Structures are given as structure tokens and as C-alpha cells.
Image 1 (cartoon, rainbow, N blue to C red):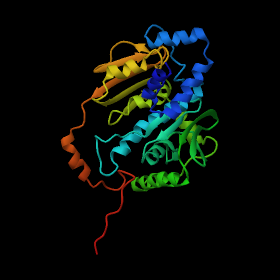
Image 2: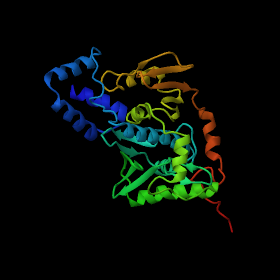
Image 3: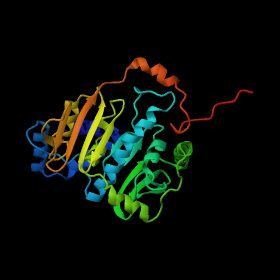
Length: 315
């Protein structure tokens, strides 16, 4: 049973065995016999044991932060597509694994830190705040802690040392400079501009947190896009994973989202709800491999990507 539970969890989180096995064994060790029997029945599809082996965020504040990180992650994918040589077929995901602890540990894909920081770090522009208003960063020797000012919630970006941080921030600064944007990063308590922006544009809620904790479901597709409005989310990716397969795993009786079920149809896709929040899933036409060579040959102007470099002058 342990092996089956580990495999199910890893299919959602992307964790390696050394991360997933202890987490599953710790839960099993604490379960009384009658709850173990329920897990066995759930593995047969005859009961519901969701929330045990892939836990959800425990508080509303934690869910909110994780929703914001998930949204920024799907935006960061667009940057990764433009990393030279640009490609619509190469996987463009910022995370390779998520450990869904009380404070999630996110393991970054190669080259992903800069694009993710560009989407996350709040900056004061003339009349608005770019990035995630209220987000604050606390650096540790081997990780970066993401927090919201004045809110008891946190997410860890694992494996980010001083050198990785500098490489990531170099990307951010190049892109800011190329686009002529402000480099006045928000720090400390919420600024008035951040308060005003949050009053006009509330932070997203809903199932984004559950999706972040199951990001591994989507890494088999070249990219993932997300949109949110209030407590509603929409996801799309190019044809590859199958909407039904993803939905089945999101509703799985062991590693699925508690209470999630299918509801009225989504045009060209599928809609799920847990009774409070809704999620739309759909696949779109896949990229054409015939376009890859031309895309890779494009010389992007300054400001399009943080990997831009000035042209070499031949003497």
C-alpha cells in the first residue's frame, strides 16, 4: 500500500522518493486501524480519503499566498519559452517538484528563478504596483521565503543560494531596464500604493493553492496558462495530457482535492467545483513543430526577454 500511495502522491507533486516516502509513512504511522481500512477502500475507489496524503493549505492566508504564487508561476512560463533558442515545444514550467508541507517547498526548474521573481516582486510604477502587491522576500542561505506583509503565511523556494539569487535578479534587472520600467521594489510594511491596488483588485482565492500543490500534474505539457476571477480559475494547456485524465487525478479519492466534482460543462473543456470554488480545464491546439526553427532564429529586441544581450560589434 505504501508504494501505491507514494506513486500517487509523486504523480501530483513531482517529488522524488526521498521526499515522498517519509511523508507518506509518517501519515500511515499515525492512522488508527479503522482509518487505514478507509484508505485501502479509497484505493479501490470505494471510499474517500482525500486530504491525508496530499494535504491542503491550512488557513485562508496560506491559500491566498499559494494562489498568488501559482498565478505568477504560469506567467513565468511565457518567459521560459523565450529563453534562447525560443521554443513552444520545450517544457516551460518553473517548478520541477512541490513538497506540500504546511509551508510548501518549491523546487525550481533550471533558469526559472529570474522569470518567477519578475512576476512576483512588487515594484512601484507611476500609478500602479507591478508584481504581487504586498509580497515580501526573506532570504536564507539555501532558500528564499515568500511572505505577504502582515499575513501569517509562507512559501519556500528551495535551493536558492547567493549565486542563484544574483543570477535571478540579473534577469529581473535586464528586463526592467529593457522595458523602461521602475526598479523601486516595495519593502517593509504595505505601502499606500499597494493598499490602494489591493482595494481595487482583491487577491485571488479558490483552488489555485490546490493546483500549486499538484503542479506535477501539468509538467507533461509544454506549458500551462491560468486565469482567475475572484474564486474562479481557468487552466489551459496544449493537447497532451488529456482534460479527463487531469480531472480524474484532481478528483482522485486519495490525492484529489477534497470535495471536488464535475459540474456543468465548460465550452471545449470541463468544469469542476468543490461546492464553493470552480475550476475550468481545457486543452488547445498544440504548437506546430514546423515553426520551431524559425522561432529559434528570431532575434528578439531589448525588453522582450531578460535573456537579451546587446549585439556583438564586429571591428
